[in-house]
Length: 64
Image (cartoon, rainbow, N blue to C red; front, side, top):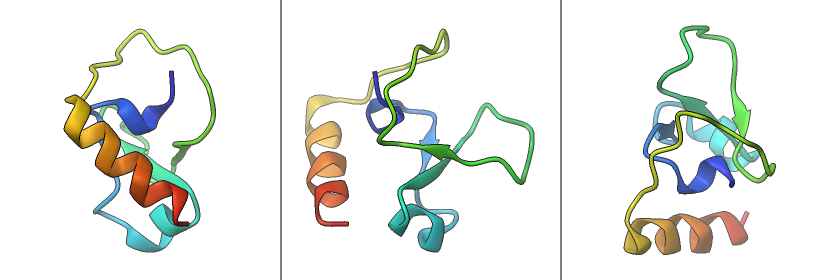
């Protein structure tokens, strides 16, 4: 799975980091830590977004 398809990913709080391929996990308490939304990972807290949101995010990320 990729964080790009998870409800916990926040791409709007720091648009500069998002343009570089990183987002903030809303469950992570560390303010300084960002996750690569392109990296394949295993996560126990994954909550998938809807297919429409996933497509919109994937299309946006492919332009970066």
